[in-house]
Amino acid sequence: MENIGLWIYLASTFDTLSLLMGLMVGISAIFLGVFLIVYLSNPVHINQYKHEEKEYLNGIAKKGMKISTRILILSIILVVIIPDRKTTYAMTIAPVAVDAFNTVRKSEKTEQLSSIIDKTFQLVDQRLEQELSKKSK
Image (cartoon, rainbow, N blue to C red):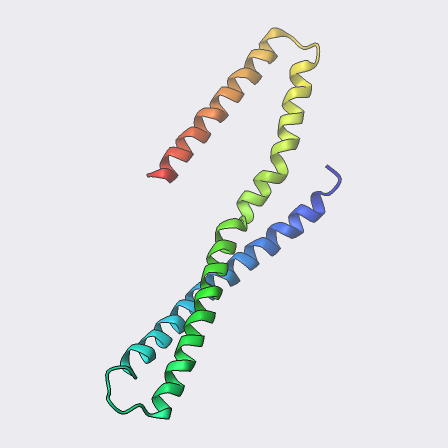
């Protein structure tokens, strides 16, 4: 794994980017709410007399809602897709650990060492299943 430094850098970058996208979700949701309130509290179609000011505000509110909705959806997608620091570290270390276990397993060691490695794999699988079941609840 020659690019371990790159992965460590990406882990901190992804963590910061994920935080910024989370802030962007909150900010765009607030703007969407404000534009929605402006649009709903300034109905042009209810009054008999259409004022240019009301039409202008409704136009701005519609454009603002469209832009805020697009930013909100894009930010939510990025928050979901971008891994956090722990996940990036796990993605970096997992291939190295599997290669190390497979190398030891293939070497001409005693049966005891092979059984210890097999038990380790079983324990790791059980632990991962437990963690995944906790997260799904």
